[in-house]
Structures are given as C-alpha cells and as structure tokens.
Amino acid sequence: MKYGICTLALVPLRLEQAHRSEMVSQVLFGELFEILDEQPDWTSIRLLETDYLGWIQNGQFQKLEGSDKEQYFLGRRTVVGREGGVLLDETTQLQLCHGTTLYLNEENRINLPLLDLTYQGSINLFSKELVESELQQLALSYKDVPYLWGGRSEWGIDCSGFSQLIYSCFGLYLPRDAYQQAEKGETVDFISEIKVGDLAFFDNAQGRITHVGIMLDRDTIIHASAKVRVDRMDSEGIFNAELNRYTHKLRIVKRYN
Image (cartoon, rainbow, N blue to C red; front, side, top):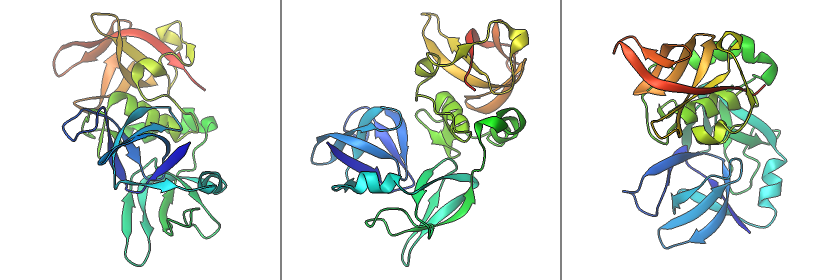
C-alpha cells in the first residue's frame, strides 16, 4: 500500500478529479490516507481515520516512504485547541485550525523527517469524561460560523462536519456523514431523556437522514444550517423562530459516550 500525508492547513476532497467537482469533505494538515489511484493532476485517496474516499489535488500532500507511517504515529498525539496554532520553520508559518491532529516528538516537532516543523499554539485538553461540563461551551463558540458543504473547520462547516469535529475534541470519533453517524451509538427513546451532547438526526421526504445537530439540553439544539445556529427542538423536529416554521423533521436521537 502507498500512503500520503496532507501538508497544507485545509484542502478540498473532491468527488471527482476536477476543481469543478463537488467538495465532499476536507483534509486537514497531518491527516494520513491510503493512495488508491494516481493521475497526472489528482490522486484518489481513502482517509485512514474515517475510510472516507475522494480526490485530492497533487501538490497538496507528500507521499510517505517505508516506515514513515509507523514512525509518525509513535509521536505524541496532540489536537490543536480552540485558539488555533501555527507550524513554523525558518521560512514557513502555517496557520492551523481547531481540531487539527498532530503527532509531535519531544521537541514539539512533527514526528516525520520530511516535515521539520515546530508547533506553537493552543492544545485541546478535553476528554470524554468532560462532555457534560464542557461540550456546550465549545459548541457555542462555533455559533455563526458559515455553512459550507463538505466543510470541517471554523472557516466553514457542514452539519455532520460540525458534530464530527466537536466530538473528536472529546476523544469520540464519528464517521463523516450524518447517515453514517446515525448508524452508531445508542438510541435515546424519549425526548425527556436527552442529555447535553446527544446527537439528533433528521430525515427528508424520502426517509433518508440528511441532517444532524448537537443537543445543548433536552429542547435546544445547535446545528449548521446556513450558519451554525441555536434553535428549539421537540418531538416533531427543529423549529426556526425566525421563519416561524419547522425546518427539519426529527428521525432519531443517539448517544455516544
């Protein structure tokens, strides 16, 4: 197998090998992937953490040789905190977004010879034991971040990218898309039993799950729809007070921790 590592802060992952193709997700600095197919301008990849597939433009990553992949993961796993951080060398200053995962050596350098960069910045210190006490504040810090189809960062995010990112900060790792996330976890049977951090899923007229949000309490949800916003939710779904109507029909609520 051939592997690669993303070497820019945030790059598109396309459905097909063209700039005009749909951006299905994004790849963050330091994410590793399996190389499936190499073309002159694009490479087909499978992200190792989520098994997500897509095309990345050549020049936005580096190939890993020999034991580089194993060596990289021997480093200290470090997640960039909410205030962000930078990777530095004599000529480079690469701004990283919240949630970026790095593997660093004892000198806070990327644990790969081909990327001799030092990390400076905030570090995420949350764990799954802190979901109930810390998740609400972290999720609310994303309020008004613009919606971006395929987005995974504070610079633009979609609904499942939002739940995936927030959960990852607590050491809870979800698949990429809403329907995939809905296949995991334990079902919460009653609205009255909802706790902070539970995920609510919503379906379309065909019964396909197309939306997800994070519950802040039993009747308040934060989700990405035009922007990251806070709305009321009940057994029918999400009620948008600005539009004075329900915008999403509730399908199921799941718990993961």
